[in-house]
Image (cartoon, rainbow, N blue to C red):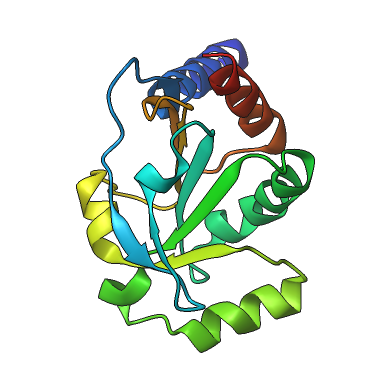
Length: 164
C-alpha cells in the first residue's frame, strides 16, 4: 500500500510540474502599458531586445512571499534582465502602495518596476498567484510557471530565453 501511495504522489508531482511549467512556443507576449509605484509609465514593448520576467503576485499570497527571495536573487544574478512585478491585488481588497512598500522595506528587497494593475493580469489570463512569465528578447512568451518558481528553475528559464 505504501508503494502505491508513493507512486501516486510521484505521479501528481510530475503532472503538476508538466502543467505548471512548459515552453509556450513562439506566442507573442501581450504588450501593455502601466504605471509603476514610483509614477513612471512602462510598456512591455520598451524592453524588446531584452529578456523580461513578469511576475504576478501579492503580499497576501503565501506562495508569492515564499518565492520572492529567489526572484530578488535573480535580479542580482541577471542585471540585464527586466523584472516587472505586477501586483494585481486591487480586486481582492485593494492592496495599497504603502502595503507593498512596507513589505519590501521589511524584507529588504528593492525592485525597480512594481506595477499595480489588474488589467495586465487579465490580458495574460492569470487565474492564480503567483504566476511568472519569461519573455524572450524577440517579445515572445518563452516559458511560464503557475505557482511558486524556485531560483534554479527561474535561472534556467532566463538563460534559455536569452539564447533564443
